[in-house]
Image: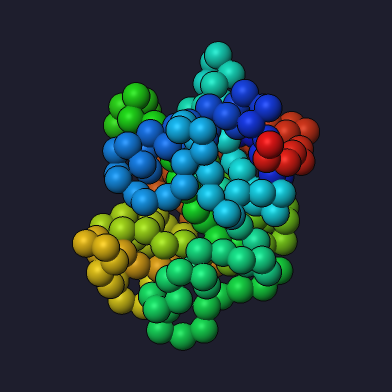
Length: 206
C-alpha cells in the first residue's frame, strides 16, 4: 500500500529510508548537485510541512519507492528554477500540485520499479481527486516526458525540451478529472485502492 505523509520527519524510519534512497538515486547514481544532510539524506528546501509524500513500503516496512507533491501556492521547482521551460504562464494555484522526486530504487529491478511506479501514480491520482487537485505539473528528462505523455491520461508539454546542465529536460502538465483512473487503467497503469487507510499524517523534518 501507499502511505501519505504531509511533511516528513527523520524520526520516522520509513521517511528516513526514503531520504537515504533519494540520496543514492539522485546524488550517487545521477550526480545531481543537491543538498545532502548528515552525509546520507537528500533533503532540499522544498522538503517540509507543505510537501505531500507518497511512499510505498516494502514487507519489512522500509522504503520501496516514493514521490513528492508540492502545492504550487508555495515555492516550487518549476516556478523557482525552470520557468524557462514554459512557453506560457506557469500553472499554479490551489488546484495545482507539482510532481517531484520520483524515487524508484535500483535494487527493485526493472519490473519491480515499474510496478511500484504504477502504484505510486495510481495513489497520486486518487490523492489528487480527493484533494480537489485538477492539474499536476512536473519537470523531467525529455525522454521520460515522452513516457509520461503517452501513459493515457490527458497530458501535454508546457514548452519544448531544453538543455540544462548537459541534459535535455522538459516540463509537462497533466489534467486530472474523474475519468483519469479509467484512462490510465486502459493502459495498464492504474489500480484502485492503493492508498493505505488512515495513512495521511503530518510531521516536521528534524
